[in-house]
Structure formats: structure tokens, C-alpha cells
Image (cartoon, rainbow, N blue to C red; front, side, top):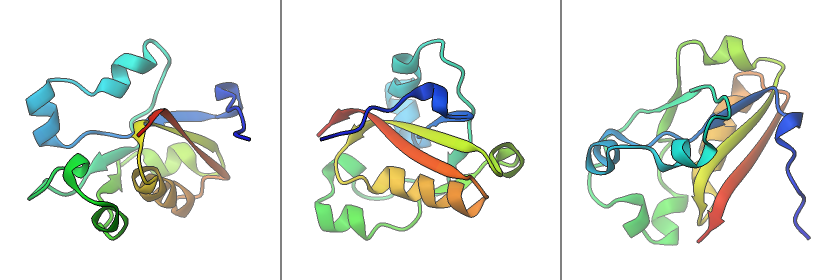
Length: 121
């Protein structure tokens, strides 16, 4: 049984960023549109250029062994130390994307980190 996530339990709500190539191709981050007017804080930014296959084109092994694609934005550490952080992404495939982001949030001192995806692929 899956647990319901109550957004109000989070002190900080953030989203997974899209890389620059995806942003240029699409022109938007789809999670931003789906979250609507809910206040989110940009905690992560992509640190690698998507060279080679897009994430959606990778197999499970490649996704699970991919290096950390994110880094914290400069104000992130002061914003999340001791706080409860909710990370929102569009699609859950292997969970690796949220795990990468969550590991950075925990390392920065977040007291609680939870992931929420809008669809399961």
C-alpha cells in the first residue's frame, strides 16, 4: 500500500530541474506547469550537459549507474538545513533521479526528504 504524501508536511517544496537541452527543445519544465501556483524553491540545478542518450532512452542499468546529475543552488544549504523537503518530479521510472536529488538534500542537512512523482512509467 502506498502512503499518501501531505504537501503541508514539507517546509520546502522543490522540483527536479530539466537540463538545458530539454529546456531548449520543450521550452518549459513540465513539472512547473503541473505544480501550478504552489510555491516551489529551486534547490537543484543540472551540472552535466546531456551528452549521448536522453534519460528516457537509457535502459535500467544505465540509469542506475549514471553519475550525480545535479548540484545544489547556492542558497539551497541555508534553505534546507534542518527542514523537511519534498522533491517533485514528473515520471518515476527507476527512482534514480529523485534519489540523486534526495542524497544532496540529506547531505545539506535536510531532516526529512520525500519524493513525489506525478506519474509512474
